[in-house]
Length: 269
Length: 297
Image (cartoon, rainbow over all chains, first blue to last red; front, top):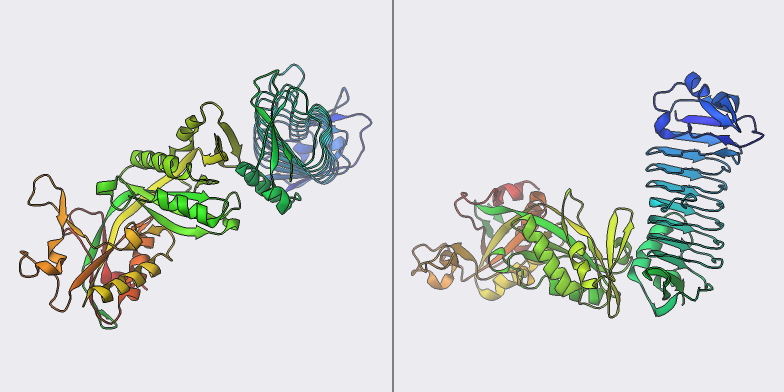
């Protein structure tokens, strides 16, 4: 039986729950799990004060309830799986290096920020700074995959260096800002200033986008690797039609204020 | 032992340990993928003269390839891992990268790998782009029709080279027809190639020569024109043509299965004997006994 945590009391203020991590719950029984320390605002409380604990960790944790105010779930995890049946708060999977987190609802800001590996799947929407770098940090996401079926807000993939971010809906402003490398695919529309300050990497959108003047149009072509990526993300249930798979894409090169080795691909026809 | 009226000689094919790799070539159309595959597997009949042996394993439908385009699977064999790396880099660089719309992916999972895209990327002169997706590390090399996509490294595994059948028939026409049927049947087996033209070789060789500079020379024992002249002739008086099929495979089971279906297909009226070439069992690591292979079905 996998470990199930059910939220029985809604917190008044956000809870810091980085103890809910696959790496930290091996061979821990229910009583010991309930006694684990979490922070409710500035107060130290026990996990059992907010969660009903059932079962034992066997590689998978199921978490139930409205977790919008639960932060840092799965932060730093290196393996296993966390399944969240509802919404979840900020910093989900921050710095994770392996394993998988699946969110059936929406996720807050900073999900998988500075992640190194593993996979985060959000069936709903995500907040700001998906896979981003913390303020003052030079590098965001360095590997792994973030799949968001819905929309994402500002600065998706801020300073990312490696990995893949997919947004099934729209992304807001500054998508891929200061990007170093890696790939961001937005199946919907992007906000303004996409790719601002990017050095390398790819931002792909299925819609026209307002380009910064420091980006140069290169050509309209059919990149084979896009087929590889679109075929890959189709396996996650994202809607990719044959026209997108077989289509042509405008290639814009930038950002000229940086290395000018990044690219924004926009579906053309 | 007989299959139909064809005698299966109680002997064995002597095969050698080689190293094998698999390249998956895709393109916008099946024809372009095949053009690249044929170019890549050209002049790769024998490791003695060509440094590698290569052939087309099978065509792949679009839903079986990484980029969902029509593909062709190519197997390439060499005597060592380093040789695989060099030959793959040369042949993918010269024959696949040059062919419009193609991409080339690794088709073999193995702990041993050789850098291919990791070397070819330098053709991009600094404009190449690395992409990592799942277990695939790909290089995008800018070329004049867009980009050539090639995998960073290719897997290499232990393999078997030099499985063979000798088909002895009453005349050239009959023997050729039987060899063709055998080759067609053998190509249906995954994991093997027949490296010679259309899968059939007429110039079987023996080790050594009267000329000191040659390491191999014509297999006089199986040349019907030399019956009575050569020191030993293994061509019975009822046969006037001998054709050989050489098989390289990724494992011994695939090679044996190919030999089995090949013998079944070749045993037609007018085919007097099916036998196999060996060196007395002292050189090759694998002894593929014809009777045992047939009985294993």
